[in-house]
Amino acid sequence: MSDASKERLFAALDLFREKVNENARLRQMNRDWNRDIAVVAKDLVGVEASISMRAGLMEWQPQSAENPHIVLTAPADVLIGIFRGDSTPTEPYLDGSLTLRGTQEDVLRLDFVSLMIWGE
Image (cartoon, rainbow, N blue to C red; front, top):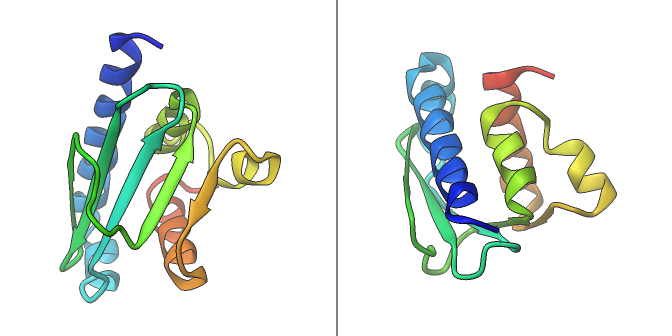
């Protein structure tokens, strides 16, 4: 994969952050959900990102999270589609192209965040 895929992934994370942070209802619901999430694009060697949820606000960095609560692993195009709202996490999860590691509660909460922003 190219630097263009890396830039598209980072742009999708920027859009996702913007949508999470501008949603007042979502911020209120997640005010006590403090989690670090690793995002691994398995086809972009050396490209990882980390999402930090603190007091209902989301930030992300272009580096791996230390001791993440949740790990999302998928090809870059799958991650881009999810973070841009072009697809839900459900289909890639069911077909095995997206793997999630974390507690059931955290995975459900992350899925709910996506649903609140993009709908079904």
